[in-house]
Image 1 (cartoon, rainbow, N blue to C red):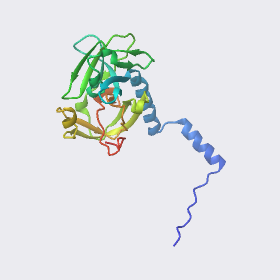
Image 2: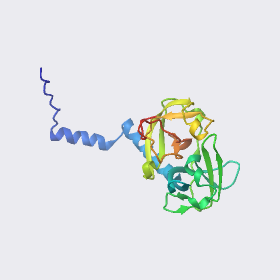
Image 3: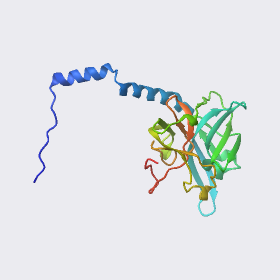
Image 4: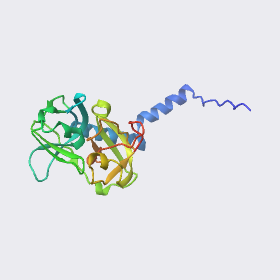
Length: 228
């Protein structure tokens, strides 16, 4: 037979006012979590950069590649660096002027030196600019499945974006990207935080606001985020 009609519970004006007062007063664990996430985003995003690089393709001419990166410092070597994925900038080398780094404050700079490792798909770009804010190093060895993480970067070119998810799995390998890119050192963190084209090279952050991974690849049937 026909489905029975279901009416939404109606609230009186006084009941609505009471609920709004309770919500405004805060104190819930969800509200506290929301404030923590906001603080993390506020302290992390100045360290996240958008990267544009250009490469020459015989059949198409000059092609643009976009991605993300994160400002870091080294315990062993002075200076300031951008960590990103090698595939974001690789085809632009050796022309460093073909790599543009868009900072949080609107400045656009070029790297002065680049190191790359094809086997882990990681690149490190040395930069010389004032008032950069390196992100703090975290410890990915302490991550547990179910831990909340944030992914930052420029999905579809939308810079300064942040998404939230959990650690879905650890130690992922044989992801099918090695044969295409030569990535052999595969010990990936799997997350369901929304990651899309343009997020490559951006940081994965723990709830202490520290770097615990680099967003590298998505498993997708149509090219967009499917939570893996």
